[in-house]
Image 1 (cartoon, rainbow, N blue to C red):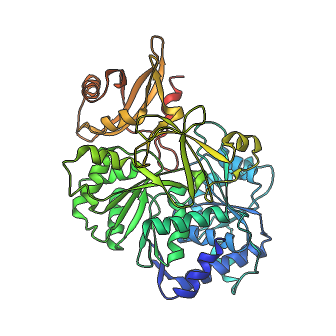
Image 2: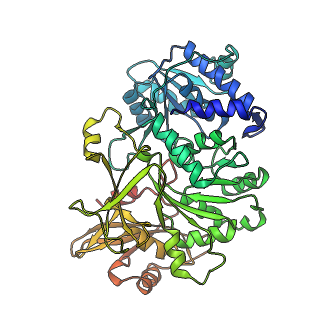
Image 3: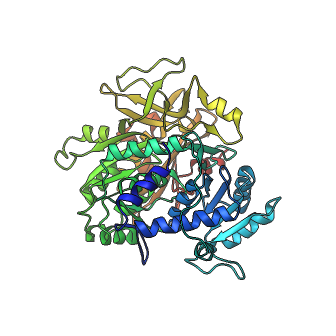
Length: 515
């Protein structure tokens, strides 16, 4: 099983169907396939062979989709780059992967130029042409115009590496997560089954395609003959306009994106009647935000849990009946935050001694996983790979409880758990309460050093436009809804919270100034 199978299927069964919508471009799958063939041939003529690494630095665009498939056809390994990284970080990845070529959007010329100056070797750049390529340099369309027909056939094993995704680096050195053809294919087929995807589905790529919060849909949507709608950058109103215009049926967004959308005053002016599923993943989401999502979109909401190392989804939970039973607050809170393991995944929650936690929704343990979608390890880091795995199980670093029906409820990241006065405080539990405060738009809870308690609970909040609140008001609000030791001892008001390139709240950045 490899990723070329999805391409062959869509070429054979859906040639005349609109497969890709990107701005003013509307490509049928036949046109898309021919463009991918041309790009694959061009890359092959440039000397790219099986196992070679190709980097891509680009916003969501048809070029990104074409690059994903062109590299697959010739057996190369694609390395999507976070375009918010610094030149130093990009040059590190280019050096670490020994990339032979980079596909880039012209708008990133300054950071590309600086990255190349830092490299110890030359690197060829293929510029895409939605914008004008740098002076005197050829664009990728010129390369594609020179070649047509099917590219040379390359034998691909399901264990061959298809993609390298570099982690955000929030805890230290960036690590390249290796994903094989089997990893990505099995995940795609599993999500197709879980989400009941068909050729009538229209997916909008809102989360960045360099991140697996969205990139997994590249393969699943194509496999069923669905339609890809490209959104280059997140802006709530333009996303809502595009969703309405193209009659989007399902998508996944980072919780911070959804929070901004549901708090936009124009959301009620849009028609989302075509939308059947809204997923969120990549970070915890507060029940109050889920409640607003359900009210705004009136469709099935699916809370997901996963990580780069697992392609990403490990669990899903569908919240269907909230609008029918709004009074059932406890059921709503429960369903909005939990999930059962998806297909092709084995998952356990274990205590420090390695035994499984009781299914009682009380005992806390670490999530460990194995299965067809789980990475074989980290690029050039055998020690890190060995440290992450034990007896074939990947230790995720995420803490959870399991209820009587086997639903997993994530309580926190191990590194984000706060120990204050000998008591464990899970940051997500406090954040969920903060999001219920009528004046708070965004919240992040961290532990900061404290002479008396070891760590103190500290809340970083962003207020909604036009709203006011004092630190003591927020602390008192939390004390009414939480045990007193869980309530923040201090509150910091910020104009915005720092984010990683994928849109997650960057807690390390908040903690660093206190350490």
